[in-house]
Image (tube, rainbow, N blue to C red; front, side, top):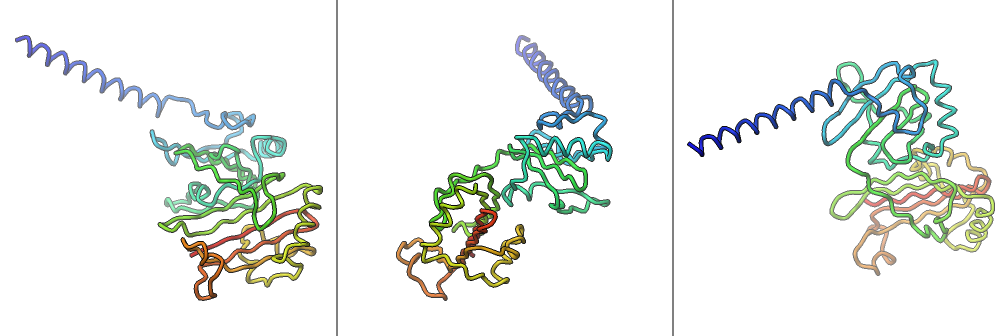
Length: 271
C-alpha cells in the first residue's frame, strides 16, 4: 500500500514537471517579446523593424532575419559608421556560411556582400544595401590565431584586418586569406623590409594569380606595389617543406603590398 502511494506521488510530480516544461516552452516561444536586436549596441526600436523571420529558434541555435524599414535605414547607417562594436572587418568564410536568407518556396540564397557591417562578437550582420539585419546565436566560433609574421612582415600591429579561412580534413588543407591595413608609419617600416627581401619585388603578378583575391578585387588596380608568389608543399617532413619539385607542390602563396594605401594582401592555399 505504501509503495502504491509513493508511485502515485512520483507520477504526479513527473506530470507536474512535464506540464511545467510545456508551459515554459510555450511562454518562451509564443509570449516572449522579441528583443534580440537590442543586444547589438544599436539604438533599434520596434518601429524600425518592418518585419522579421525566425529561421531557427531552439536550445541549440537562434537565427532571425529582420527587415528594416526604409525610413530608419539612414539613421541606423550613421550608428553603424560611428559604432566601436560594428565594422567592415569580415568574418571567417566558414562563419559566413552560417548566415543565409530565403526566397519564396524556402530556396536558400547567399547574402549580398555589397555593403555589410559585422558585429564584433561574431553573431550579427547588417546588410545596408538591402536593409536587413541577420542575427545568429549558436556554438561559439573559434578565435583565429594572430600570426606574428607573414612573409617577413610583422602583422601583430595593424589598424584593421579581414580574415577568410577555410580549412578541413585530416591534413587541414584549404585556404587562408588575410588583408591587413597599416598606418603610414608602419607602412614605411614594411616598405623598407620588402625592399631588402629577396622574395618580394615590384614586378606585377599576372591577373590569373591576383584573381585569387576574389573578395578584394581592388588588388587588380594597384598602381604601386610589391609582389610575392611561391609554390608551397604541405608535408610533415620539414626538409620537404623547403625542398620540393613543382610536381610535389600542394599549393601556393601570394603576397601583395599596396604602397599607396599601406595594405597587405596574403593568400595561402593547399589541396
